[in-house]
Length: 126
Image (cartoon, rainbow, N blue to C red; front, top):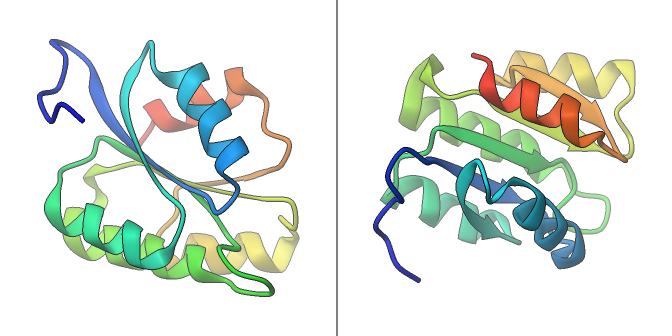
């Protein structure tokens, strides 16, 4: 993959264990962002450590019954501070999950399936 960011494009990290969902988001958002994807917490951690992102979109569950999305959020906040908008998306976006995600540093929580227009708006905000 070419590491050079296209002129004027922001860099987005998508973290989701479902590669079909990641591919759909990547295709839909690639006109606005240079998109990189990770499907595990370890891949996400390595990408966060080695790159600078303008926005991050993470699923909550990266494993069966897991909640690794909170760890992705915390790591990204430690690395980038408050300058990067972070959106957590989950099919289980309950009030409790939303509260924990926001406390972990997410800017927004969206319930799957995510409407593309709303996702674009959230990724552009800080």
